[in-house]
Amino acid sequence: DIYEDEEGLTLIADLPGVPPEGVHVNVEKETLTVKGSVPEQKLEGGDVVYSEYQTGDYERAFTISHAVDASKIEAAMKDGVLTLRLPKAEQAKERKIPVRSG
Image (spheres, rainbow, N blue to C red):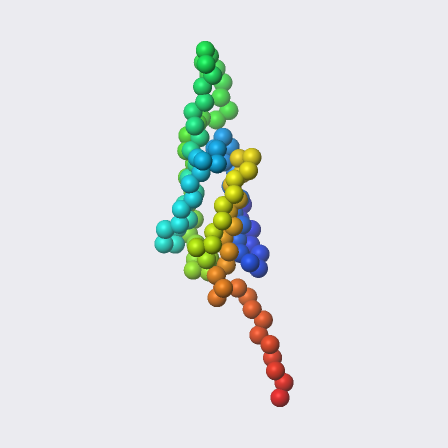
């Protein structure tokens, strides 16, 4: 999910099974890439008889414009949910122009 407000964008991504150290967020030129690795889990002395999802990797790429200040992107991970904050560059923020009389 991606939300926008006056200050920037917020991207929320569900990454079930991915620990915080398994998440990698990179910006190169105009591409924001999110990768997540799920470690394989094994139960000692047992075999998997049913699995909801396969272990593996997640990867998603987004094109970002120059309206985003890439140097100030922040990332947080909690309970399998990654939240990225992409602040708008100063020149992209709306600004009110005062009108003088006279």
